[in-house]
Image (cartoon, rainbow, N blue to C red):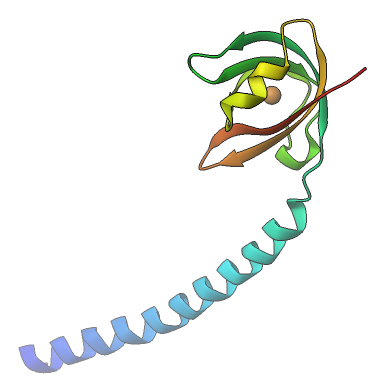
Length: 115
Ligand SMILES: [Cu+2]
């Protein structure tokens, strides 16, 4: 086998093995997308306000299970999208709140006092 023939065989093999791989990757991406949109039915979560930090727009909440984020009950810090939401709550308040995941960060988009 001369060098030119060898190169042609190698590139033909590479092209042949790449094509099925890329079409398979595309099909599995579409599957993941439909799965994610079905699992993202968000709902309000109940919690107790532990700490309010107006300056950095953060609130510490002892929350119940958050099913749409697959998170068990715990106490944790959330960033609040709208600082105005924090004006309505203080430590010790019981609330319902909406938490969403944006780029790996957990954001509170709504807070409703519980009475
Ligand atoms: Cu949590």
